[in-house]
Length: 112
Image (tube, rainbow, N blue to C red; front, side, top):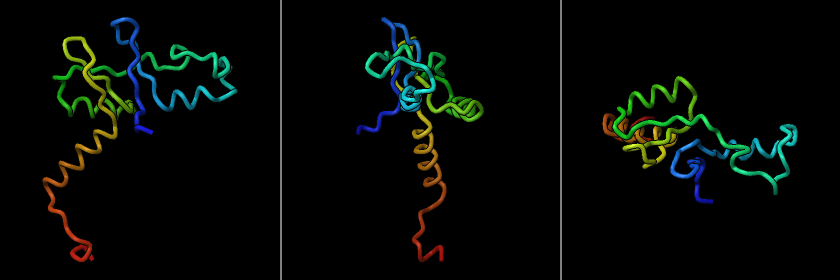
């Protein structure tokens, strides 16, 4: 409904992982042997090995690592505190803006 696909998971003040829409879909698979839906907890299905980066990390390094490891999101921290989530969708948005800054938009008539 709101387009949220990644949620950071914290235990107290500690960032411990990320819960994704994929994790939730997988949790519904009866072959996994997880508890019934009404007895499931975040701890049963979240990804504890989230990719965490500092806000000062160069974007090209983050993108390269996400692509190489097939990672859909990075939890972004500043001074050890969560400040945001950078996703593959965000990367596409940035790349689109970059391409538009380099190549002028053309109409369909110009292309044909």
